[in-house]
Image (cartoon, rainbow, N blue to C red; front, side):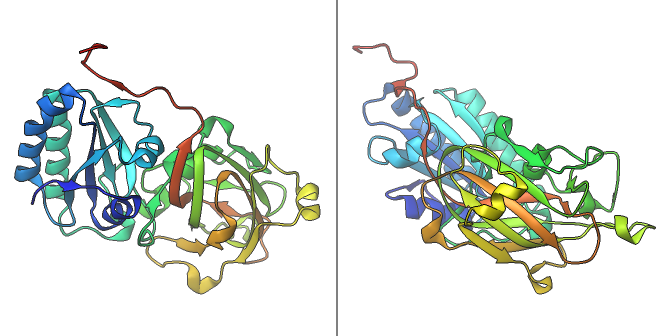
Length: 326
């Protein structure tokens, strides 16, 4: 299988959705190092390409500027590896040894995981996702700004907000229950949670994937619930207070039904009114109530599906290895 030349955002997003691993070579026609490493890249593609498993692409950054900006390409060549739609590794510059090392490792991992492409175990230990990504879109969870996350009414004995966006498989699916890992969040004084998510780039948000894996407690009031009613607010400069949220119209309020939860992964796919979630720089996710009478609500993972746009701040693109004037 040869290298695929990308001619549009839609074509690339389709590949991200259909192939477990996608390798992208961002290059420019004027870039000398790009031309020097091209035979190495083409050779790796011929050896290791496998339908729906490992796909090699080339993206002309001058012609596909939106893609170059979306993935923070600041120099040519830049090689980016995507696993299950998420950017996981970057190789900057014409470094054949490093490029070969990264791609060979991916190929070995793909071989070991053949036949195990179940949604609950997709990826190779660093790119878990709880449900299929909608066709034409990608998992853009890596676009969050973890330093700006805020979560109100969090139980301090559970995890911190950033665990919601951890790329690893939740411990609750590994049968660990309330282990010392605490890679989930729970509410504290009542069932409500208010989560503020700032993004590094402007997004078009298609849907959310919410994973909740409650474990039973001897005290029924302490057995956490899954979320039921969720209200979403866009482009707020900070987290909303609970009283404040009641006075501000939500961009959308959704109700997650019991039938929406996948039995294997504990994940509900929450489609959004796409037209209302364009040019999103931040999300406030208000978990209003749960699916029972407990005072606790638990959330293990959140994945954000959509399209990523321009980064907030971009440096000037430059050639790696070429001096000005060459």
